[in-house]
Amino acid sequence: MAEPRTRREQIVSAALDLLADAGPDGVTMRAVAARIGIKAPSLYKHFPDKDELETALIAEGFRQMAAVFTTAVEGSPDPLGSLATAYRRWATEHPHLYRLMTHKPLRRDLLPEGLEASAALPLVRAVGGNPDLARAAWALAHGLTSLELANRFPPDADIDAAWRTGIAALQAR
Image 1 (cartoon, rainbow, N blue to C red):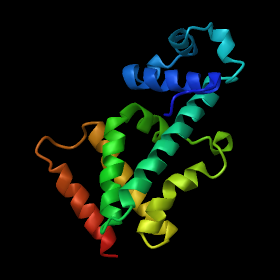
Image 2 (image 1 turned 90 degrees about the vertical axis):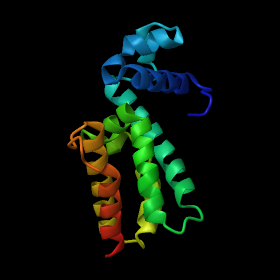
Image 3 (image 1 turned 30 degrees about the vertical axis):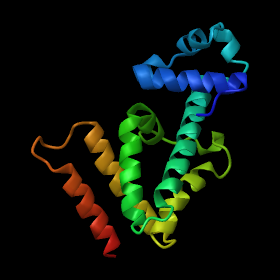
Image 4 (image 1 turned 135 degrees about the vertical axis):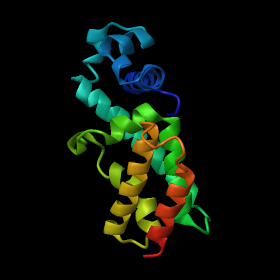
């Protein structure tokens, strides 16, 4: 996140830091307020409830992913492979934010208009504009990532090979 300028941006930045440091249980309105040196009731002037704060965190996650994905495909001879690598890297570097973004219903009504689509656009383009194939690719990436983050693969599993095999199958379409 860029250097926060507004109080709302300061709150989101503090919440992102708490999420990264302590996981979702560490992101309480009281902890966020303490992080920026205000009283918890003051947060409610900017976020009426924790759901809206979580949606702001998710929106920031989408912004970050959109930037990472756009960079990943620029000039890449293998855009889908580059996106898969970028997706996995971003998720493993931001596991708590990733889970917040992907493991419960998404409050699209609270997201900025078009944000989710802008994050998905590099993937849609990488699969030739086919939204169904893009969803299948996302499902593959999400499934592999979620299993990896949860340490659900057997100890002898070659996770890199699973990624390569899945991407190759999508590319062979």
